[in-house]
Structure formats: structure tokens, C-alpha cells
Length: 353
Image 1 (tube, rainbow, N blue to C red):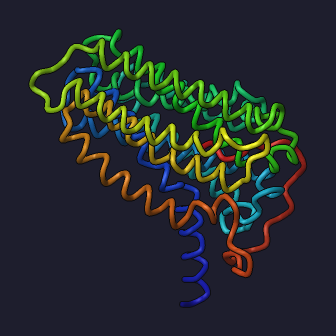
Image 2 (image 1 turned 180 degrees about the horizontal axis):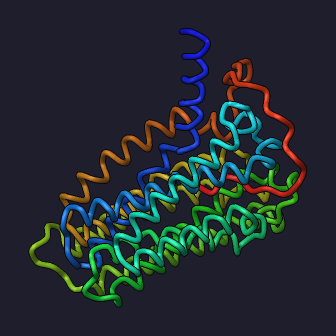
């Protein structure tokens, strides 16, 4: 491999790492869940937009998040693409802006409602990355709201026939993603404290953070169960409410298993324990969204979508996640790249997944 080809390969790997392929599929499933629960027009292009627009926005959010995170990552995660020099900050910023432009074009084409939701989501991503993440629970709630906005975007794309059935699911996804994000902060305590962040585990300890996250998760499961029970049943769909509640129960079992690894511990959790719990939640939330898809579209479409998403997420997470979060194992050389300039001093944020 020539030097030029080697640099291109290194840059490509840096971009793929920035995308976090193990988190990439969830938000598109949320858009499809909203489209199914909304019960409006289900033309193929509407469903494609319900999936693609949140997914593109998710990728753009990672680019911009890493751009804004570069100072903190230089302290605690210097192996990541930008601080390691494998991805230029300007390239990350440009890719993030390009993704947001694409989201804007698709959202405007969908109408005023989708355009407004896209603006709110973009504002939420920027506000989270620029400061809310460092301020504790408000940052977790802001991050959790992005999942709800993705679901609402999917509903608006198909022109929903009713809004009341969506309210419970909006609460469910908000609480669920707040819980997941809060668990994610537990693995970043050392870096967040060094960067001057006042996250929940930094201020109150890991055990308190895990307990609050569990309360949000319980609220998410309860709201999702209520949503499934109050939504009018469609006798033409396979599975129906019974299938939905079964999938929800199986998914919740995985979620509670993740929390079971956190709560029995003392106040300070090992980083790898917190990371493993979040890895379980990354897989669990695909099933959480898949259950809602099953309620709106039927059990078979849900299985067809969820199984590949779970497989790809599990495989990429097993291969990439620990190295991305914790760095390469001892004795393993870091990926080559130009030496980055020292980042300017100042606050930054950490991984929003």
C-alpha cells in the first residue's frame, strides 16, 4: 500500500469510527416507528424519508459533537479520530454541516411540521454539544429529547391520523434515551471531571447516577406499555398488541439486565463495567424501537428490520466500541496519523451516544 493509499485508508477508518456504526441504526428505526404509529400515508418514499432523515442527522450530530468535543477528547481520549490527527477538525465540521444541509432539504420537502422538528433537533444537538452535556441532568434530558423528535418526525412524514396515541410513546422514548445517555456518562467520569464537567456521576457519584437512570428506564417501559394498550388495535396486522407487549417485555429484560450490572456495585464503578452496561442498552434500544414498529406495521416487518440492525450493531460494537472508548490495548500501536496541533484551552463535551 502506497503512502497516499495508506493515508486515505486511515482517514476512511476515522470517518467510520466517527459514525459509530453500532449506534447508527436506532434513530432510523425511531423514525419508522413514528411513521407506523402515526397511521398516515405509507408510500415508500415517505417511509424512506422517515428513516433516512434522522439517520443523516445522527451522523451529522456525531461529526459536530466530535468537533466540539475535541478539547475534552484530547485530555481523556487522545486516540479518537480528531485528537489523534487522523481526522482534521475542519473536515469533521464540514461533514457535519453537509449532513445538516441534507436534513434541512429533506425536512423542508416534507412540509412545515417536518421542517420545524428538524430545526428543533439541530438546535438540540448543537446546544447539547456546546454546553448542556456539561451541566448534568439538563444535558441528559436534552439528549433524550432527540429520540422523541426522530419519532415525531417519522409521524409527521406520513401525515398522522391522530396524535393522542403518540403522546405515550413520545414520553417513552424521551425517558428511555435519557436513561441510556445517563448510563453513558458513568463511563466518562474521569475525563469529564478533568474537563470541568458537572455531570450527574461527577457531582453525585456513579451509584446515584445509575439509580436515576433506572427510574427513567422504568418510566420509559411503563409509558411504552400504556402506549401499546391505548393505541387502537389493527386486526389486519400480525402480532397486534399481544406481540408488541411480548417484544417490549423481552426488550425490558435486557435493559434490566444492564442495570443489574450497575446497581449492586459501590459508588465508583469500573469503566469497563459501565461500558458493558451501555453496550447492552445500545442493543436493547433497537428492540425497544422494533417493538413500536411491530405495533404500527406488524410483527413480521419489525423482525425483518430489527434482526439485521441487531446483528450489525452487535458485530460492529464487538469490533470497535472498546477501542473507540478506551483506546487500543496495551502494546498495540495507535492508528497512524499526522500529529495534531495542541487544542486550545476551554470546555468541551463528550460522546453523546
